[in-house]
Image 1 (cartoon, rainbow, N blue to C red):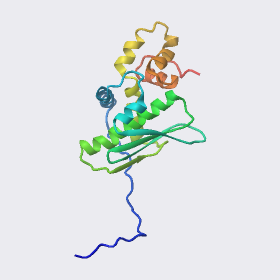
Image 2: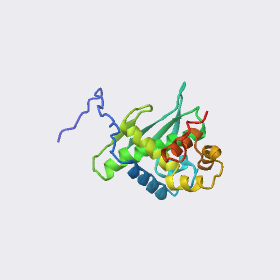
Image 3: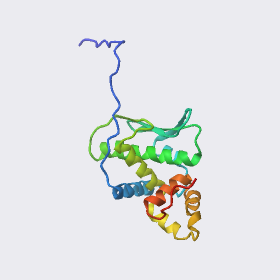
Image 4: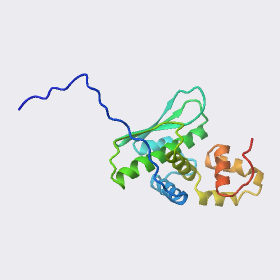
Length: 193
């Protein structure tokens, strides 16, 4: 038997996969986010960093000179969701949920259900793609389940305060709360200033 001598100067040319949209409907994404919440046993407004840790992932921060967003990197059984170091904790929650959406829909499902065999997935921040839209929809449904939003909204008599009440109750930004309410047809006003 001969000894294999590796080329010490050869580079590993493995490339990370890009997130591919599932093509899931809004209803399917709502159901998927709800099932993820049930499996994670996460309470409304709960600690997402701890939840990610229980799943074998971690949340880390990255420096930025402006903007907001997140990125995901998943390799094998591990994943990292990176968020910016200067954003509000409620914005961070949305970004973490967005990263979870990518991990579930564009890494776990293709590998577990479809047997695609993605070994390495990298999703950059600011990506404008159908997969990113799915991750956004997942984040809204994950943080603000439609049934819970409707039930809570029915208890708020002052519709002018509804966005703020949802924001406080679900620990999300006012903008995220307003967009969710718009998407569910519970408000029709423009985004509050």
